[in-house]
Image 1: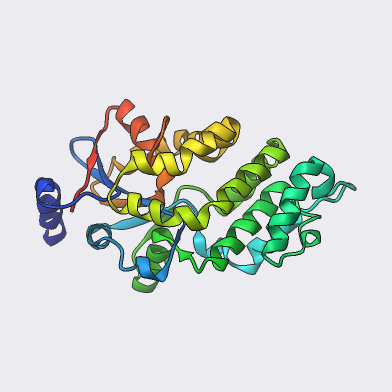
Image 2 (image 1 turned 180 degrees about the vertical axis):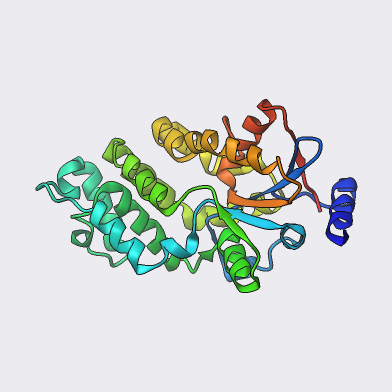
Length: 285
């Protein structure tokens, strides 16, 4: 009863608070809270906006894109490496154009990572490795999803996942079906501006400015590779709509934390939910 009353108060008076990247989705009877996350935050970016913690407090269950604990374990890394390593005589260098390979070699060399350490990896695993290393180099750590994942396991709050670990591996495999030059070039372009744009991205995320966030992230990716954007963002949005709809069939309050790129730009998850007839509005706490 106390949680229900808290929810009524929080949803009934949105004008009294500042907006942030949280939304309430409703079918008229039941509610789901969707929180946008960013991939990396620095220690200076904590604490999170208060509304994120309030949403967590009133939620019965918190959902993530995938099991963050499982993908951080050695077993997943071994499976990923096995499925993402060339075993047919090809190498990363052989599938990339000379120009893109040289750009990759230069970028990794500037970060003291020998390009030969990536040469046997397929493109998706190579760019994932570079992204993680670049975040560490810039002193960036887990985003809100990682924060709430750790908190849920520490406090015993029930958790769920939109994608399984096996689906994550299949997803990486689909990325390898894209043009390797396009995938690597788009990643290098993103990583080369990460240091300059990370503060702008975090500021837009904090104030719930999805248009600004899209311009900083999704719009550039759509321009460089519409196919990659579809694989990373819109195709997955379409898969997740039914899962959100299923959550709205029960009175339990679910809190879904996912990358804010899925909540901005054309074909975003919030638009798809509206198209299904659900009410979607900012949850401004």
